[in-house]
Length: 97
Image (cartoon, rainbow, N blue to C red):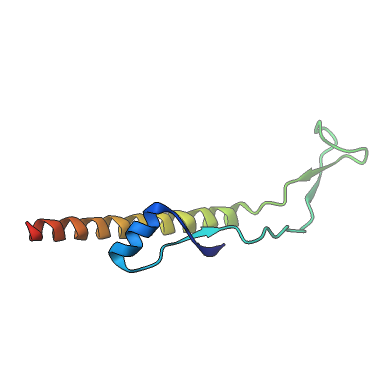
């Protein structure tokens, strides 16, 4: 992923209010993984080839789970930062009253 500037009416208003630019993310490229499929000998399996081998996905479940947890923690951190900024802005409005 890479950061990109978001151009919208909301961003312009927020930029004028906070004096900062807003950035988002987008997929910059997709890198294919060229690891071979796991080959298992099981001639009774319906998907077995003529040699009796079944090719299982090359997905590493542990690695994918770690990536999912990492993304989840990043989302939680960002949501918490946004909530804190919102709470501070509301408190500033209360002080101004």
